[in-house]
Length: 124
Image (cartoon, rainbow, N blue to C red; front, side, top):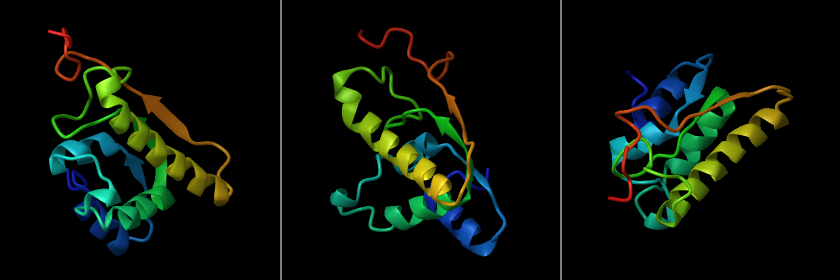
């Protein structure tokens, strides 16, 4: 799992020009224990990393992560709205980048669920 974090992914994308990736950005959030946001002061390199991923992405694994796990308990819950908005903006950037390169079709796999990821009683 060499691409498990954004910094190694950045380094691999720089080193291997032909490398294509699936954007499963939710896992980056749990590894770093935060949702990436330049305004936080911690993520000055996130825009560069996301731009590299957007350029090389061929598939989006659309799951909303947060600092406590790879999947929020309920993406419709108001307390997770900021995480959802960040992920949607990242996915939009990927899709826009690929469209600007002439890519006509991108695949997106929405995922929310399965035991082990999905909390069974999120309101308890």
